[in-house]
Length: 516
Ligand code: KIV
Ligand code: ZN
Image (cartoon, rainbow, N blue to C red):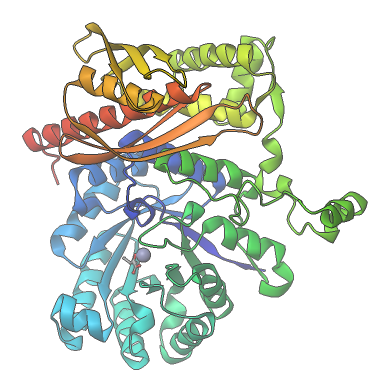
C-alpha cells in the first residue's frame, strides 16, 4: 500500500473562497482539528500577504507539532524571508514557493521569458533552501504548461534543492486522462525526479478536481493537496474527505492510503463549515446530510436485509454515527465535561462554564442533546467568544400577521454601557436588524443571510450565517440559538464584532508592526 501525504490548504487556498474571512482564533481552531485528523502538512496561509496572515501562520507553527506547517511564498526574497520568520519555530519548517510556467501566465502575467522564469525559480529555491529543510516548489498553471519546458524547469529546481514538486491544475481545466499523462511524462523525463515527491493540486471548475487528484495519484503523485469540504477559489479545490474516503474504500483499485483518522472527517467538515459560513450541500459526497440517507423503499428494504446492498461507506467510518443522543436534562457537570473533552474541548474553565449554562438552557427546550448540539455550543463559547464588542442582552419581537413587526433589544456597548432600542420592519428579522443598526448607529448593509438547523427535529438549534457590509468592509458572522430570531440577531452582531476586531488588529499592526 503506497502512503499518500495529505497537504491541506483549507487555511490558504480555502480561505481565498469568496466571502470567507476567518479570524486568528478560528484559524488556530481549524489547524488543531486538522492535526487531530492526521493531515501530514497544513498550509496555514500566505505570511507575506498581510500582517494578519503572518500572525496566524506563526501562531499555528508554534502550536501544532503533529503536522508539518507550511506557508505560501512568491519567488521573491522578501516573501521567502517573511515566510521563514513565520515558520522557523515549527516542528519541520517547510516553504511552498511558486511561479507560473504556462505560456499565457509567463507572457501576460509575469512578462518574463521562459529562461527568466527558470532563473527566478532556481534562485528562489536556492534562497529558501538556505533556511528551510523542506522546500516545495509549484509550477502554477502546470496543466497548461508545455511538457518539455515543465520537465526542464523541474530538473533545475530539484538540483537547486526542492524536495516536493507540485503540479497544479490552477484553472480546473485538465481531465483525468491528461493529468495522468502529465505525471507520467514528468516521472519518465526528469532524470533527478527520484529526489523529490510529486504533488497534485486541483481546482474544480469543471467538476473534476477529485477525479484528477486520483488520476495523478495513480500516475506517480505521492502527495495530494486539498481542502475540507472542497472550499477554495472560484468553484473550489479538490475535497479532502472525498479523496481520503475514495482511497480507503477503493484500496483494491488504488493500492494507496492516506493514513488519516477518518472518523474525524465529519467533525472537521462541520467545524470548517461553521467557521467559514460555507454550508455543506445535503447531497455532498461523504459529509452531506443525505450521504447516508436511504430514501426509496427498495433501497431501504435492501439495506434492512443487508447494508452492503446500497451502502458502500459506513457512517461510522467518517464519524457520522457520533450524531446520537449523548446527554440529557439531568446530566451533571462531570459527565458534561468528560463529553466535551472527548469532543476535543481545550478551552478555559470560564468557557466550560459558559458552555454548561448554554447546555442546561438547551436541555430545558430540547429532549435529546446530540454531539452536534454540544459541538455547536462549544464552538460558540470558545471560538465565538474571541469577538465581543457588542453583546446581546435581551431580545423581544412582536409579530402578528396583521400588525407591524417590532423588535426591542437591550445591548451592552463596547463602552460597557447598556442601551435599549426598538424599531419596526417588514418582517421580524428586518425589525431586529433595523434595531441593531440603531444601537450601533452606523449604516450596516445585509449582503447575505442563510439559516440551517444543527440537527434533525423541530426542536433543533438554529444556525444563521450572514454577510454584512459595515464600516467599509464586508464581514461574515454566525449565530447559534434555539430560536431562529435570536440566532439571526447573534449572527449580525458577530459580523459587526468581527469587523471591529479586524480593524483593531490592523491598527495595532500599523502602529506596532511585527518585526518581519
Ligand atoms: O492553484 C494554484 O496554482 C495554487 C498555487 C499557488 C499552488 O494555489
Ligand atoms: Zn490553488
